[in-house]
Length: 210
Image (cartoon, rainbow, N blue to C red; front, side, top):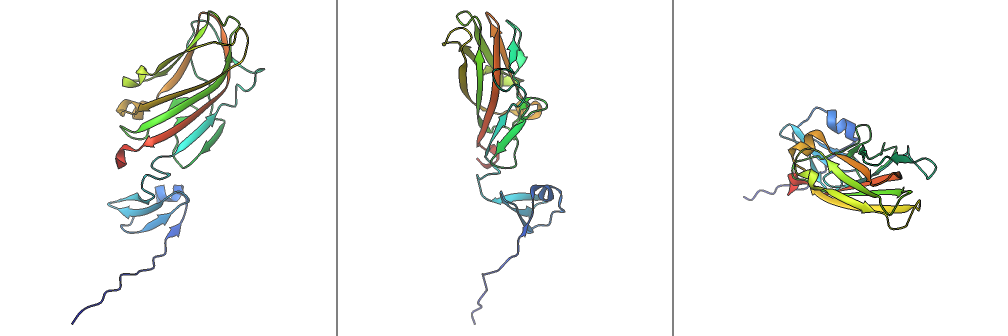
């Protein structure tokens, strides 16, 4: 005598937000749904079952500085004095729940060892002595990340606004994940000004899923 099994089950999934997902008592097999992902309790943690490689595993975020905005309110760079790039993340737009930058510590963040990211740094700048002045822009942290270093020259002449759009691709190691990384800038050869700083950070590979 054959046995027929019902393989169709209707399951009620509780819709909630990320704060409840992070704090709830985990039950194996119990499912929670947020606007970003579907979670299931498994081995004492809530794991994302959908989407794989989706919003919560990759994603992007834009961080705008709201302190130095407009040509009348700039950050002055003295010749030979390195400073941390000004970005207080006063305005943030992002695709999911993950943060890739901390506006208080002014550090770029990494979520896992061996993740891959693309960071775009956008700002405006000018110099009264453009022919002899350039900018040194670099990532500062422990390990391999210090290889990222860019020299920016002025092409438009003295006191003429120049728009910068610099793109950097990198992976994160344990030092990056634990301590974060600063973006620093220095005028060399003369003084300069910068303002309207924006970071656009995209996580292109989640090492935990690769």
